[in-house]
Image 1 (cartoon, helix red, strand yellow):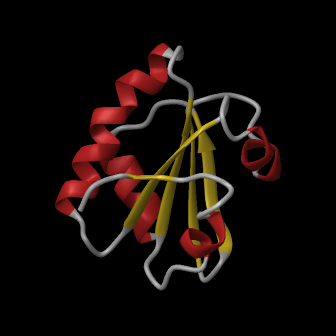
Image 2 (tube, one colour):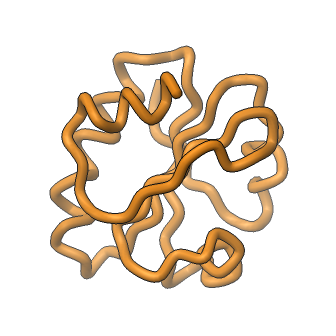
Image 3 (cartoon, helix red, strand yellow):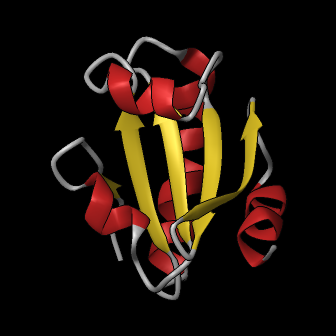
Length: 102
């Protein structure tokens, strides 16, 4: 499965997914975001049981504000429509999977 670009138009559908959701808050100019992006894409490709989405904070400031994103990259996991965990900074693949597995 590929990474879904999340915006305010499709956010409610993503948030209410039956699958656990991983949201990657990023910006194109952010070097750490570019470092974590291939890891997030790899997780999406290998784990169809999860919904993986990316939110560009420059294009979707309302969503970044909703999640109180103060630094990027920020990863958030949503289960049953609620934020289960959230973490700023780069992460190893195993750490991201641990967040998803909760």
